[in-house]
Length: 203
Ligand code: GRF
Image (cartoon, rainbow, N blue to C red):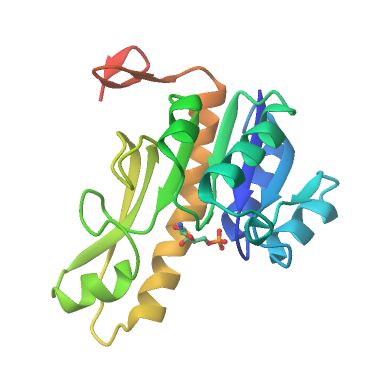
């Protein structure tokens, strides 16, 4: 399978995916890493792994629509089977999302449907939650609202601040994102109108 990964930052989830493709655990190849921030460290991770690294600066475009159209053209030039959002910090137009429906994943640092949007770790702490976590989901037009694929929970510990909690969640992200991509590449996961199907069973 051909995989395109979109990033905006450090790319530690990208690194976990690179490692899992190189080890053969994911039956697929990352054919391009695209960042809307030209200085994202994740682009360097891609280059070091011999993967094409493509900056596409959203600031060079005059609207969300024109940026998304250019992004779509760039992605499609690679003919991917799967598009993976790994810390891609842009809201996407409904047209873009529809184009990749059923073949685009996102990872979000909360136990969705709790805490869509930003500052999830602080919000979990403020709410006094005893557990927090992360979720891989199919992307649909509703922000952080698509059907869930896999989640991992971590305990909230006494003395946690947003940073310590984020680090604990991040380690689990690096486990569940490769797992979801592995399943997709092995044709075990499908998005149907009625929800996610895994090994022929509805989740
Ligand atoms: C992760 O916390 C992810 O859940 C969120 O953005 C962050 C990306 O981190 N959507 P990294 O760039 O993969 O290190």
